[in-house]
Image 1 (cartoon, rainbow, N blue to C red):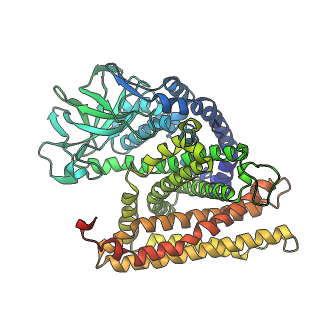
Image 2 (cartoon, rainbow, N blue to C red):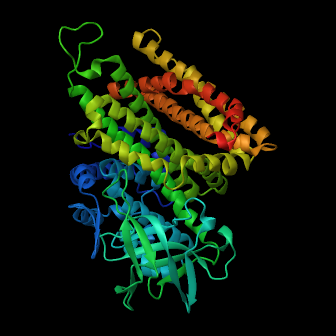
Image 3 (cartoon, helix red, strand yellow):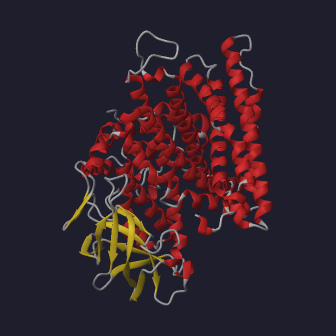
Length: 607
């Protein structure tokens, strides 16, 4: 059974040649993010992920988290791994030095998080939720709250959660029933929350819950929701944990995957009420919670990428080792299955999608750094507009694709993949939730269409299309040593990729135009095409980044000590994606523009 090996070579290529690490390092306050430092950070994290986190992945899945009278216990080894994680400073990597962090940019944090998630997705969910809680407190917490809670959360000494969902209120939070009663400077919280990741555990002595509840007398619907900081243990005068708050985990969910991650049902206020402190303004809690959600949505997109990478590595190793059948040319003996064309097709499909996902995610992370740190206000606004447009694509397309890749990886194993002992099934089980939590794919698609495209009449998409077309033109104009067969092949590959990318841009343009015209009179038909639009834009954006990767690889091939095998593979992988993924764009355009009628045609009784 294979362990995870971090793809550091590919990560560094994407950071330096596609995402623009040097430009990010030139931003104010990011000067320490040199290529040399980043390479060392990734190397150290690769060792930690491979040697500490990865060996716990399979045993943790088998053992799972458990609940008894003493609370929730994580699987053997997890608590010690978390202590090593905190002691090494990984939890504080991307936070400002002003609050005890290390100040590295998000574009560096992205590959670091990817490694954690590939090595052990269940473990990685705990710091993910803590990060979201920290960001919410940074932007909306009071000075006193930040001083009391952030230092220990940034260090990882304490963890954080977000509590949204209730039995009757899933994605529709207007149905939320948890109550908050005023009690002097604080509130007493009553209610039940479900699906709370790491709602209780044995990693740390305190857990900081951010809980949505409705203050008595607040308006109905989402306008009456407030956000509260509700700690597991209240603080004593010296800032250390004191009395236990009136909250507890009453059960753990029994899940398809991520068994080692405790998903808690939390009860607040079985006696006098759990003491909570208002975060931000009354009745604006959902707005604050979305700060956490946006950070989490990007991170969940990385989960799709990360699980796909782990599943691909296992399938690739199996394909090299599994001897089965003669090849199609009639070899004398059975061969490793990697020599069979269909297995090669599946491996290339996985490889190309993973590289497309990685490049897109890191490019979005770099844009986030520019949106926050660039000295020019107009550039910050442009970068933020790109990030806003891309977040639902990163979350929706990367997780859907990660699930597809995990399924394909199981197929490479054949019947052995369906047997739990091989480990291939765990990746598919773990990946499946990523398309659902932090907003389903449908919710991401509705956000992309309604808030990110229709709201600005497609202005942000037009900027994106202009950039795609620039890359397509550059690919078509490229000429590499036309006198050599290798140069001619590279030139042809890039030209073909450029043609497919231009075709994808045209499909997006016509789809968005149709959606904008249709939405003005028939919103239901427009939204019937929202998920196909997200898929279309995900494939196109992935192809765009692979095209940019191919251009960078061709440029680097001229250097004296070029890694020719790796760089040539970049060009070939982009061509494969163009031939096998970008070819889908016209069909998706037709689904968007011609398909809504049949989506909505049947009476409800016929389902």
